[in-house]
Amino acid sequence: MLLDVNDGSLLGYRVGSLAPVSLGGEHLQLFDDGYAINVIDGKISSIFTCYRDGYEGFRSFKGGVSLDGRVLHFDNDTDFEKVIQVFGDPVEQWNDGVEMCAEFKVNDVRVEVIWNVDGRQSLDYISLERVNAI
Image (tube, rainbow, N blue to C red; front, side, top):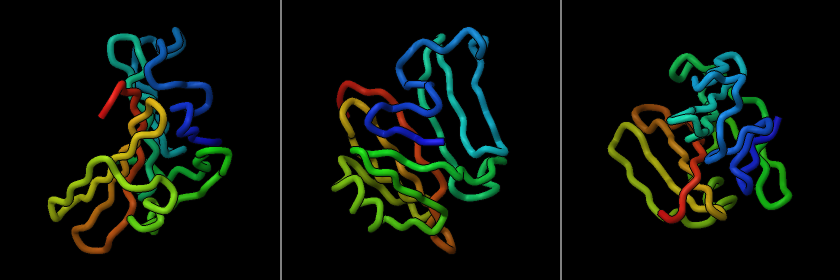
């Protein structure tokens, strides 16, 4: 299973595209597999992959992350520096003492990466959304 950042997709679900009829206009949350396909107004609005087991009831996503022909593997120990090495400098970032966020733009996909920083730092999730510009 690959989260394709360049394409903004996972398992054929692509952010910004019409949600398949099989979803019935609803979100697809696969807690045991660590991902969710979010639907708003009949379109796939975002793809969420979890990396901290138990976050919002999800198990850790065990699939890879595809970017520019490379397949990478992240887990809850993936730190900010590794993500910067992969995605480059963020277009936006913040830290409120509880969570830290770094946002990147890859083609027309917004990549949001969130860490828990209250206590032991851990990668919580990566979310993809289709955007025109950040």
